[in-house]
Length: 186
Image (tube, rainbow, N blue to C red):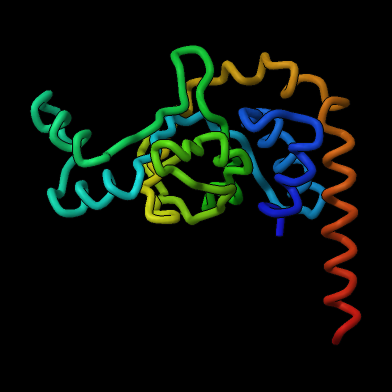
């Protein structure tokens, strides 16, 4: 529910590359419903379906220039979203799930990468700096946790709650209305 409603509301106020604001919104909405969540910085890599198929068949990601070129000629493409200063920020729910409301910023139609916000279980060691890998829409999505990277807390989207207030209130209202309908059906 939060992936669909949340992203729609966030995009009314922010661009697609709004992982910090999106995570701030997710955490505040979840906390409103008494669900614990916290932010974590990650290095995000998304591999298109051709790349994913090659990884599956070979059992590894190529490192040699010749093999990379061969895979590229077959249509294997990827996108990375992270930098030394600002990583891709996601929410960790109850130390058990990863919620990425801005995963769609990795979309690259010309590379055949089509992904949308998602929520998945994480390995226990993820929050300590491990990698979590998922298959979504034929793509492989890899998040490598960067628990020491706290640079996002200096962002205006993290510091100033007034920037996300409208989206948070709208999402809470919409979720509450849906929950009320479910409760009234019983």
